[in-house]
Each structure stands twice: as C-alpha cells, then as structure tokens.
Image 1: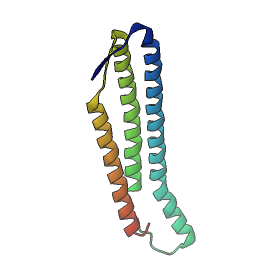
Image 2: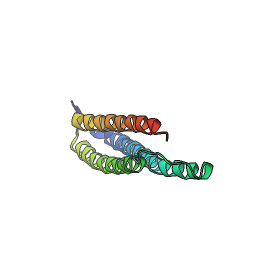
Image 3: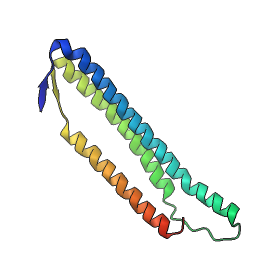
Image 4: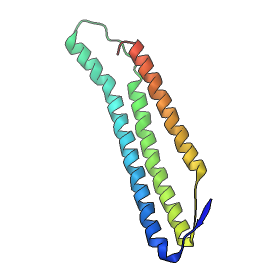
Length: 131
C-alpha cells in the first residue's frame, strides 16, 4: 500500500517517523534489559541455592545465559533495523510516497514469536530441573 505525502504534511510525517523510531529503540532497550536479567537470573539462583543449602547439589539447565545473550543480540539487531527503516522512510517521505514494509513486520513478528517459544521452553526446562 503506497500513500501520497503532500508537501505541507512532510514535516508531520518526518516527526511521526522519528516517534516510531524512538518507540523501536525503547523496545530494543527493553528486550536487551530483559535479556540481561534472564542471563543473570540463573547465576543469581545458583548463588542463592549455595547460600541457603551449602551442601545441596545444584541443578540447573544452564540455558539462562545463552537465552539472555540471544535476547541482547536480538535487541541490538532491532535497534539497527529500526535505524535502517527510519532512513528508508525518511527518503520515501522526501520523495512524496511512503510504502508499508509488510515483510519487515512479518520478520519481527516471527522473531518475537520465536523468542516467546524459547522463553516458554526455558521455563519448562528450568521448572522441571528444579530451578
């Protein structure tokens, strides 16, 4: 779907594009922050278990660090993707024609669905392992 951008509306469109970019940046920061928490949570639980029961065996899936790192990488990639899309849309606005990128929306939706599936699987593994 293409949309015409009249000259008198270009400033408004540029500002809307910037707000959208900033929303993507906030989302990427949230995903990276959550990834950091996930990566450190397993370590924190193991340290807590050692303090509570020093002689007890420690069980864990060991997946929190790789999943957390993956989330941090995903957040970083989203920020880069947001910057790329911001520049693409700016050029389109300057030309007077803006198009929706459905493939990008689908890609991000699939990535978020995959992240959700990994987190659910991790919760299942960590719950059954006693962590």
